[in-house]
Structure formats: structure tokens, C-alpha cells
Length: 440
Image (cartoon, rainbow, N blue to C red):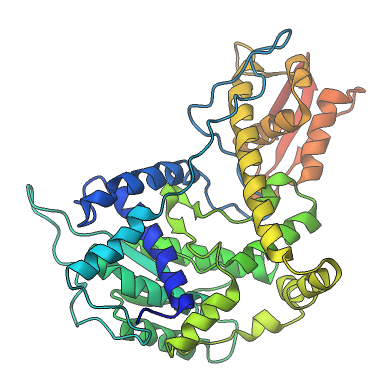
């Protein structure tokens, strides 16, 4: 008898991500099933482009361009027209992945069980570094786990799937120190991860600042700790337990801020420097993850902050989304998650266009020419202006839509106005038909 459908769903999601990670390791021998390599290569190529999307600072995301995008030159237009549409992406072929289980069954591999059994002690010891000519150690993948249902389900799936692919699996939990008993709770979560067979496991205490509000400050501290742990252990990737419901909430928050299409694109499946962060559950709903924990008898911890109406996301989760579903019917979460992917595709295309157009609107000295900027479509021009402001030293997380609109008026609504002050002590002004953006 196979695993419960919820357990099967989370394991398949993690298995696909692990295959992608393996395929991206140039020095690793890869999976023990060579017939899966074509499927791995296809997904790895798609994720390699997505990996260029680094985790955004608060308030926005840095633009990025996709390599290899060729721009069309339209009649009567300068050579920075809209990018040629990409060739249609072939549908995901999961037959090779499904063949893995069939092949293992023929080889006498044990059937998966719903109740978790810890791996043998020492099964994932990293061992010494490989000597010249020897096979390098297998890659290490960490799971970020708070002890909640989403991340515990993710940890259980990683612990089950990683050994089958020769991947070392570890875990990290972050103690934000915002609640009484948080240190003890972090130790308990770490112990649960060890009982699943993960190794190494680390509980890290952080100090949460105040910049940007409590939610943003906690997020910044958490990601800093995760980055440090990945660097310390040499991890190839960190898995995050964000679900489709989290994605829907992120889209609605971006819509409420009015911060543009990039905010509507939500969270990327692959993000961070070098594609460090992976989100296998973006197509899985929160209830599936909770059900998977229940049928595997995994203890979970429900963070009281997630139900505290003092937090914006909590109010959206318990009041906003239910009200939308009551007014519009079921399927709102799925529609918002779909909107995120469509918005991400559009934002990537516009970023690529802006990246190509930027060189064409600068003079020989590298200064931005206002007349050429004016000829660009607004969405492309504003991206060029935002990049220029960030390059001059304006913090991306503090650069909001109103700042870019003021910059844009120097191009499209020039009435002799003076210099504009931007975050990071950056000053922008128009001089002799050129837009000068520099440190004040």
C-alpha cells in the first residue's frame, strides 16, 4: 500500500526539486538513474534562469534581465523595441520521474510508509573533503523549519527523498526571541529534525531589529541566519515551506501596496544568490501539508503570531481571504497563485527589455539622455530609472513608486524643477538634456 495522497504529493514536490539540484551540481555524479537525466536537464535549464531572481529587500525587488533575449527593431523605432516572444515552453514531462518509483520497485526497494522511521545513525555523515581524483562529497540540502505544519511536512519529505538520491539532508530552525520560551521551542524543533534523520541540524538565535516593522525585521534576521548557515555548512540549497496559500497572501499584499507588477509576481520558486532558496510547495495548499503531518504523526507547533490580528498577514489570512472567497466563490487562492506566475513572466520580460534599452539611452560618457529616455515605453523607462538610482546608491528596499514617479517627471514633465532627493542621500537632477543621478 502506497503513502497517503497528501504524503505522496509533498514527497513528489520535494523529489522534483532535489532532481533539479542534483542536475545543477557539475562536480557530482548525479542520480543513480541515468535515464532521468534528460528530464533533469530540462528543469535545471528553466530554474537556472529563475535563479537570477534574488530575494528582494523590503518594499520591492531588484530588477534582473534574462540573458539571450533579442530585441526586435520595429519600423520607425529605435533598436530597443519589445523582446521577441520566447518559444513556447514544452509541457512538463513527469514520466521520467514516475519511472523512478517503478524502477526501484523492480529492484526490490521497500515501499514507502506513512509513519516515519528515522534513518540509521551516521547515514548522512558528510565525511572529509574528496582528495584529487576522488568523487566529491554529495551535495547538502538544508530545510528551514519553524516547527509549523508546512515546514515539518517539508522536513519529513526531504528526509525521505534525499537518501534515495544520494543527497545529504540537514535542517535549521531560527529562534527570533520574540516570545517567551522561544529558545526551548527551537531546541525541541531541532530535536524533531534529528529524529527524522536529518544531519547536520542547527538552532540559531537571532536579534530582530525594528527597521520596516516587526514582520519585515524578523524576515531580514531570519534570512541572514539562513544565509550564514548555508555558507557555514556548504549547503547547495535551502528548502522553504511556503505554500500556495502563502503565495496568494503575498500577491494580495503587493496589490494593496500598489507597488507594481513585480510585487504581484509573489515569491519565486527559485531565488536567492545562485538560486540558493527553493520553494517546492508553491503549488500545494496549506491543508495538504497539515494533512501530511497528521497521517505521519508528526508533531507541529502553531505560532500564535499567525493568528494575531496585530499583524497584517494574519488579518489577511483569517479575515481578508475568507471574505474574498465568500464574495467571489471558491478558487480565489488558486487564481491569485496563477496571477503570480503570469505577473512574474511579464515582469521578467520587461526587466530584460529595460536591461537591453539602458545602454542605448546613454551618451558616450555614460550619462542618461532625456530625449532617448522619453522615447521609451513608460514601463521600460521607469525600470531604467530605478536601476540608475540603485546604481547611484539608493537602497532598493527604500525606493518606492513615488520616488520613481518623481524621477520620471524630470523626463516627461520637465518644467525647470529642481533636484530630487532620493533615499540613500542620492540626488537626481536634469542638466543640459542629461539626467544626472549621484550621491548628494
